[in-house]
Length: 30
Picture 1 (cartoon, one colour):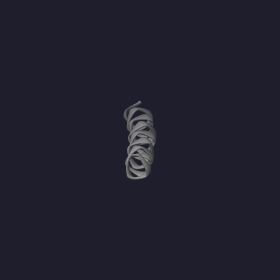
Picture 2: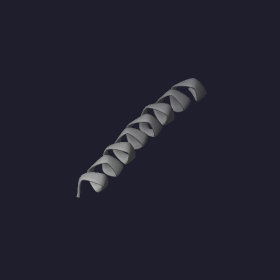
Picture 3: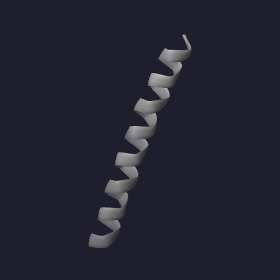
């Protein structure tokens, strides 16, 4: 479970980064 927790943390960080990046892209397009 510990290794899975680490993996989940990385996935959550990636999702947050992709989310912020998408917002920046949308703001840039506007």
